[in-house]
Amino acid sequence: MPAKKKKPPALKSRIRSALRRVWLYSPEYRDAKRYYNNTCAECGRKGTAAKGREVKTQLHHIGGMPELPGLIDEIIRVMYPPVEGYEVLCKECHKLLHKKEA
Image 1: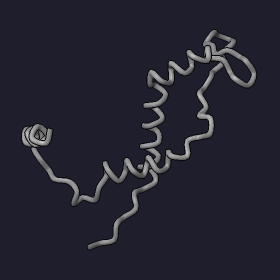
Image 2 (image 1 turned 45 degrees about the horizontal axis):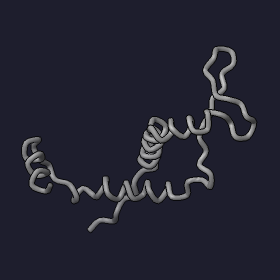
Image 3 (image 1 turned 30 degrees about the vertical axis):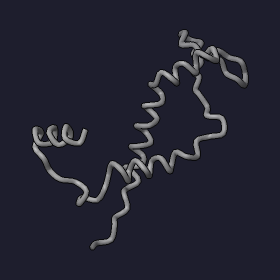
Image 4 (image 1 turned 120 degrees about the vertical axis):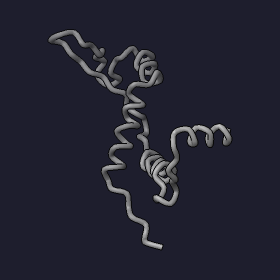
């Protein structure tokens, strides 16, 4: 059996970007900004898009997100198995197979 190839860093980068987009456009992100009145906890400036006075705010995970690298590795393990972990099916057979599994 050939040695397992390492996934290219580009894959991890793409997954990280996708997870970030999921977070940035989530209701939880929006709700957290509303909860804190979209106001900076450090300087008290309120986020605004008013022309000439733009202040962008971001959410900061207190304590960081140390589990993110592990999560990315798990996504790769589950969603990107070696080629032997796949099979080619037509659309109809694929649909039927998932109905049987449900």
